[in-house]
Image 1: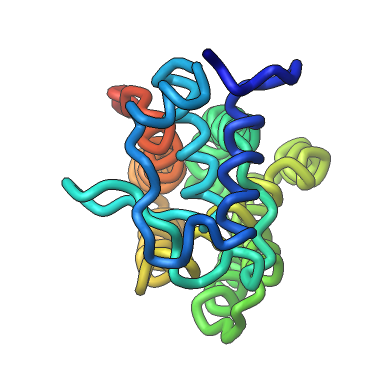
Image 2: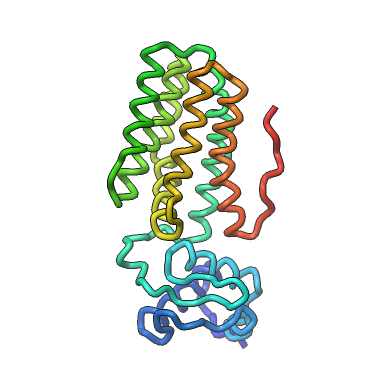
Length: 243
């Protein structure tokens, strides 16, 4: 019999119950939590619900998965990371804004490559240098610097609607960027360097006036994040190619 009787999103309820056990010390740091099959039986929910709940806890930094071993309580309490973006709905929201950005920013990068001026290139280069040399563990500061790089590209199109659009949806974009930078600082050593390499490829293509290269570079950059979120939700990666 299911022990879940409350109304509402089942995955969120499972997340809340597992979080309570972690907070209370019932599941201690470094301890393996019950298997997905055990959790399904205990809570009376489907494997999909348990998978989404565990994904939320992983993104929130509460648990970590070890290949072939199971899921374990994180050694470092996620609360010290001030990481509050942990629901499956948050991941889907990040994916949705990335899908929108792909269409807009691929075109912006192509136009920036063909319409660039020395002033516009200098603006993109300044934004890139600032992000690359940024010394901070504040994900929101990193996210703003990341956004400024993409905004500089939009301005280089010499079409005012591109930067206006990015600024209009800045809150949603910033949400995804904070999620990305908080995740990278928590789980991936050197991940920011990888992001900067992707930015460097975009800058290089625009500087050389290579519209197709710029389009491909920014598509690869955004799709990498999109496919990472899809992997978290066990959804198929994008198979689209850029022409």
